[in-house]
Length: 347
Image (cartoon, one colour):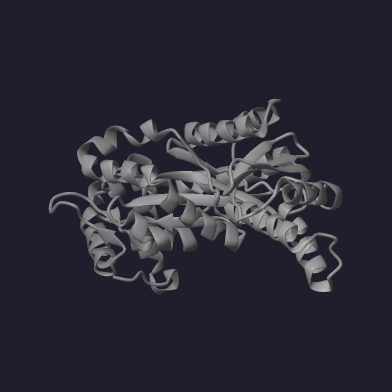
């Protein structure tokens, strides 16, 4: 059943609903009317509280897992709480210091990404995830070396020292002089550019007939560069740390759900697809349970935020994944702060 706008609830129902959700997110256990009455926050009898709980259940915001147990929020109820009632708490000074300490460590950016997923896991009690940024190397040199009559090895050297290789099919009769001309053209004319920029320059010269290359060499350069740019757009690496955090005490009674969640994490391509939607939105997103088909069985939640370089461009996504009873009010600002800190580290 779809959740109702928060304005449709009475003040008393909103307060009881809020207490149930907060207690459930804290303990992972259904909340009963006697426990709510004993808190002293509500000046109502257990019987009156039960009546309100029943109304909230009718609205699809709460559910009773067992006939004699208390209530727990449904996924619709959690969405209503997150969107309309949650009061986020800023990361503590200790949490901020821990995150910034990880980001400040010297070393390759890969180590910072690993550290980011680990610190997110440690602080949230869930599994931390970081999508590695799609890097666009700037070309320093390109060499095309014949392997046999039908294939060549294209070696791209980036300005950062990275070396990558690709196999390229050769048209029949392609000679070594053609390969050398194509290599020299890229090194002389396209050095210092990203792959995307190099393709644009190359295509512009083709349209204006200003390239000094013969048809065979020009075809090699164009196909080689396009192969790299297509590969870069598909390449998505997801770092996941802290899966063991998902096996807490409350999970032991729901081992099938946890097994399904672990399977979800193993299917990193699907998780990456989900995180890409956060990249496109450019803002923090919260996915709760079956709102996303990927988590229809595991009933998991994801909190994800894009991180940017110093020019403000979204270069990747990070976040946490865990059961729907994540402490959203605490984890959302933590994920936001980590995204900002990693963006400064990326540069």
